[in-house]
Amino acid sequence: MRTAQAVAWKEIQIYFSSPTAYIVGLIFLALTGFFFTQDLGDPFPEATLVPFFNGAIVMFILLAPALTMRLLAEESKLGTIELLLTSPVRDWEIIVGKYVASLTFFLVLVALSFFYAILLFVYADPDPGPIYAGYLGFILYGAAALAVGLLTSTMTNNQIVSAVVAMGILLALFFADRAFGSVSGKAGEIIGEIGVRGHFDDFSRGVIDTSNIVYFISVAVFFLFLSMRTLESRRWR
Amino acid sequence: MIQAEGLTHYYGPYPAIQDVNFGVRKGEILGFLGPNGAGKTTTMRIITGFMPPTRGTVTLDGFDVVEQSLDARRRVGYLPETVPLYTDMSVNGYLKYMGTLRGMPPKDIKARLGDVIDVCRLGDYRKTQIGKLSKGFRQRVGIAQAIIHQPQVLVLDEPTIGIDPIQVVETRRLIKDLGSEQTVVLSSHILPEVSMLCDRVLIINEGRIVAEDTPKNLAEGLQGVDRLEVEVGGPAAEVLPVLRAISGVNEVNHINQDGRHTYIIQAQSGQDLRDAISQEIVSNGWSLRGLQMVGMSLEEIFLRLTTHEEL
Image 1 (cartoon, chains in turn purple, red):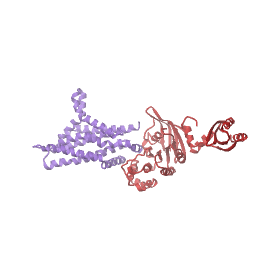
Image 2: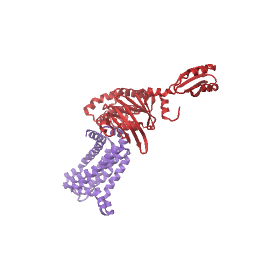
Image 3: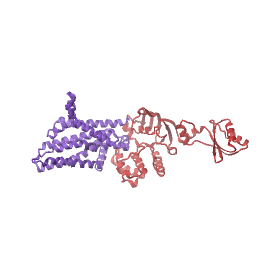
Image 4: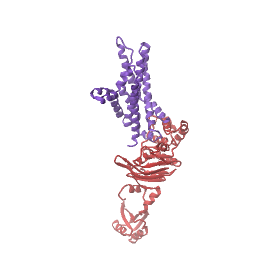
């Protein structure tokens, strides 16, 4: 466990000293700021974070892979993976350490965006339910997206490949509900259920449904599990 | 300390090593010698638990590297061929991190860090970012991370490759020092290095061990094919057939160096032909200017073992 902590701590330090993470942070805050203010110009603006949440989850299709692409791809590229895998460290400790680091940086970004919510609470009288639930949904979605990115980073030594493949998977998850109409029967329903949006929209409406929480956690656990297996399989190649 | 049995590893359909067996005693320095692509790195990766063999087993201090991988890995310090460094970390930070990964408690790391820095002479660079260090210093940092947890087994893949001659000498001295306490396995394609450092040498070629002995015995063992170098004052056209006619001579090669005629005579094994040759030369009225036995250098032995043609 201490080694997982060491891995996480090292990665967190890298996040806070690397330009990539700051660029991601800048883009995130600048664009969500835009989404947040967009509706405020209406004659009768609504005190809501829904545009912010909807924008944020789309942006994380691009930003989550940018945060995770380095995690293991660079270790493969530099050859440090050889040290990692010959140290008395379990594979899950490596994966969990890396994942926790990316999650920590993500949570810092989320915390910075509380600014929007604070503004609403100070200058308006928003319905708190959808805001709390929306944040819960956004954090769960981020956790799942980062797990997807971690998997693709484990599969390659090329950061670009990792990022692009992760974006592909996240896009597919995002648009999966579109396939609901075009595939008939049970298969269509299953594909529809895999889609991110159906599960996320409940949160931004202020509904906390256990099945949605289970959905995001399952996605995260599933991709973390695959990451562990992929790392393990490196030994057999 | 290390026991490898029947190691075979395939990359896809291609065998990298086949049926490799060896043992290393505690405190011994074992050298793997072989041309590039012979299977040295593959063997080392298996010993260190980086990847399992397709067939065969390796035990370290009794722990199987596949079945009891964590216990085995705890006992190994490894320096891969391309020194794996996090270039944006400081020397101190990197060594602390590696110590933690090897399961050292923080106070042990603190106590050990100074020693390692001293041994690897990194004193002035503790806080330097690794990316800014020269190749030789990076190599030292690589060795430092391999020994920080005082492993029982030290595996060094081409430890002196790509660094300048002065640093090569220093690195060799360091390895020799380490070898007095630890079991060291190193690979190299530099023969003098191996014969200087190692108690025992495994010559590996095309994935198989072709010879295993002390550097001294290897050289002596292959000198069984007695070779003599003779310098003769006399017309080569006449000398050559006479030398070839001496019974017991297998082969004669003539070398003309600016009018100095030297003949390399390959005798049948175990025969000392020095008397016969000198008598023959003198009785023909030529002058015998030199006669000596030539042993094979480790280079020649190596070539002999790793190439299929006779020298």
